[in-house]
Length: 410
Ligand SMILES: [Zn+2]
Image (cartoon, rainbow, N blue to C red):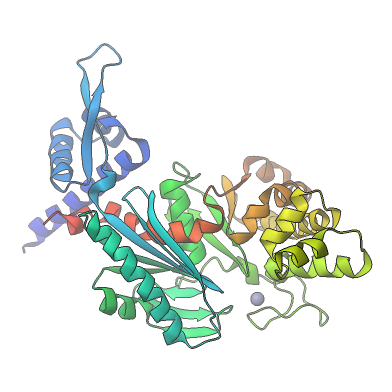
């Protein structure tokens, strides 16, 4: 291909992506509205729209008869354009979902998993669920755009390799290669918090937001930094490991999963909440928690602590509030550094958000610089504990939006 025609193909792809993303964020839109917003001329927009209609990625939906002009046909994303398979490898579970192009869940399954068992067993367990999910896609007579995998660790996204997952104690796993060989699907691998940030941008609370931080809180605390309208990856793609930012380490402090002491997440992660509750139960005996664990024959878990808090249990509520203050300290630092529009909290701990959030906001007000703090909104992810699972879906959807011609209907 000559340089000139190569440039034309590239420009065409950029414009197709521009129009497709606009329809994704702001639909329904008319061709005229697309021309005004993008600055492209009307005939270019018409031909781009025709191409996207041909790919079946968008469809026409009704007419806009508002205003004085001629009624205009409106365009929106075609949710049935294709299915997406998302996989979240948690620290003690695997979760698989099949969604449509807009991230609406069609099917899902979650199973407990034990990462201390061998890696191959956990991967095979996941693949069995993925194959069931693929059948769902095929039964709907729908193409499968790809498979996204969200992992709690640092990821080389180009090669689909997990570099290091401190909470799983896994290093250098070729997830991309293994999954594409076994499923014959296009596979995308991403850090769980980064994936969740993409989900907020495409499907969640940050759809028109250019600067926001996603904080994943669970066994660990990870961050997805969305800056200037893009995921910020840093030099090697490992940006956002906010949980391991050191807060003045002292020898007595808890050892983090990463091996260090004094990491922020050791004050605010799931384990820290369980420890706070246990420490309180040792001295106070009025709590409802022992009764709940006995009745449910369950160990102490975050959902159980939430249940106790909802019943008004002071020990549960105070433990969550303490953890919220510790989270708020980390958030305040992030606000001072990044001046984000929003900070979105998701992951397993976010189910206790109504107890954490007021404490987080109080601490931010104390520690973030006043002007910056006033601009940053702190809110909960609508996907709660599923934030990274929807993230796994979102990284595939994002590739379709970036490279529509790769998904031309054959
Ligand atoms: Zn650490």
